[in-house]
Amino acid sequence: MNSFDPQSWYQASSPKQTERPRLSGDHHTDVCVIGAGLTGLSAAIALRDLGLNVVVLEAKTIGYGASGRNGGHVGIGQRRGQLILERWLGLEHAKALWQLGLEAVNLVSELICRFEIECELKTGNLFASANPKLTADLQREVDHLHSVYDYSGARYLSPQELQQETEAQGLIDGVLDYNAKHLHPLKYVHGLATAAETLGCEIYEYAQVNRIQQDSDTVKIYTQHGAVCANKVVLACNAYIDQLEPRLTSKIMPINNYMIATEPLSEELARSITRSDLAIADSQFVVNYWKLSADKRLLFGGGETYSRRFPDNIKAFVRPHLLNRYPQLTQTQITHGWGGSLAITRNRLPHLGHIKQQIYYAQGFSGHGISIGTLAGKLMAKAIAGQTQEFEQFGRIPIKSFPGGPLLRWPSLVAGMLFYSLKDKLSPKVRSLV
Image 1 (cartoon, rainbow, N blue to C red):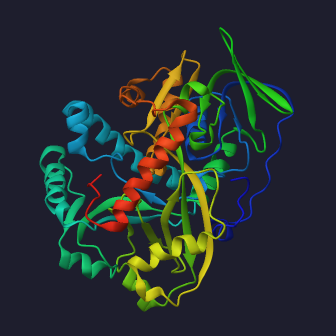
Image 2: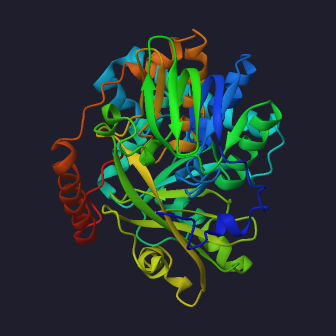
């Protein structure tokens, strides 16, 4: 995607931003952050709090990538449930990741409060299942969180309780998390950028990095019109990393996801979407997710593609997914349609680490990026300052490369994703809990 066209509702509803300067000439700094999304900007803020000088380089504009285009859900925990994490990683490691997941949501709230970011922060996320075979799994996960993690924020919703919350079609039961959040993502990332600049960070837009050169003591970062010499580098490019660091590209797969915004809904229609103003996601393999905006528009995400090309008509592409859940919106006008790229890992857990303790990276948030991506930025900053314990909890997660190498891994992913997508269409009873 080469620009923000077609314009997203997030852009249309955000205050116009002052254009940041372009990079020119040679610069020296303690840390160079590559990528001005929420991960990079969170890292920049934390680095300044630690007393380090920071230069941020952004290839396009603030929040250009998934940070400014996503569904706005701020989920608790990790992308995988705790029972699965315990099976994969052991109880101790799973508990550590759970605590970091709680810290991630708290950090988002703390940054919003500290810097007075107006981003429509609200509380409550609902996972709604379309599969009756998941009922026992949902109840088991909630009970496990209560008994083993002493977590009372999640509650199982029976079919009757779910119907009281939303009139969405094809959903059976679900789990409501009272401590999860949702927000306006572009306003959030713009607020982080303003906060970073207030603290003294230098942010440059349209400063695409084309080469990174590691020396024994420093790292040189080159753009078309300038260069930065830094002691450390933070790579926060996620799906847009391309071949900037080939050692990382095999660990993630960029996929394209799409959203639409409706015209403002009547009070009656808005209540049929969610009576408690929750953010909702369903259990389809290709997840549908939605929430109401401050002016009662339905912001709905649905459908994915796995090539470099976006649909010619995003509104028409997403609309069937919307009407499958809410047929009462047949006559409702869709005012905006947009898309963006996110990065997934094979196990849907984030990929954090470092290269020779000079280049620190975080990527592959797999749709869980607002909370974990924000936290990852802070953890990279702390690791650079020598506080590595929390960072290493993520670094210990085994992240396998996608098979097929640079030529075949994309076709392999497309084949697999299309297979599970087809199963979704043929039967709603195929999606696992996570």
